[in-house]
Length: 103
Image 1 (cartoon, one colour):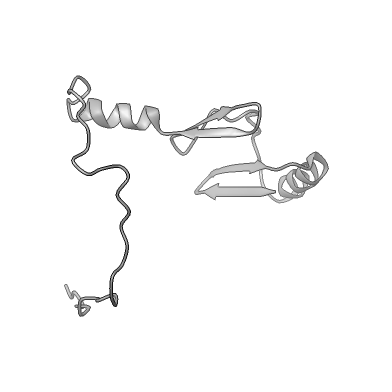
Image 2: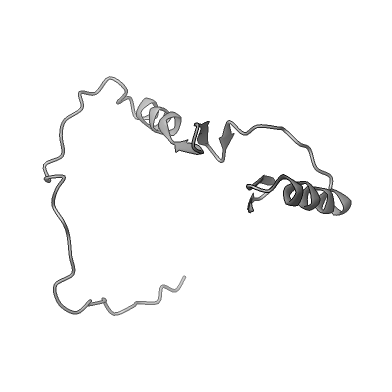
């Protein structure tokens, strides 16, 4: 069972309908709930049902970002970095000395 909460939005899902119903009823005893049935979007992420599960997509978010910055009609180009490049750490991880910011 998965129980996702963000402020006043929540998503309850899982494989066992009996457990989900019992949990939902327990929540309804304590809180006022509004059931909206099948989820299409959750926190701006599109939820697309498939035969084997769900696909999560941010296509709408990316379209909104491109529109906001007037880049929807921009010509796409390939990345200058080869997609087969594997990055790895070679040596000890060096951290910069932390600095405390004070107002």
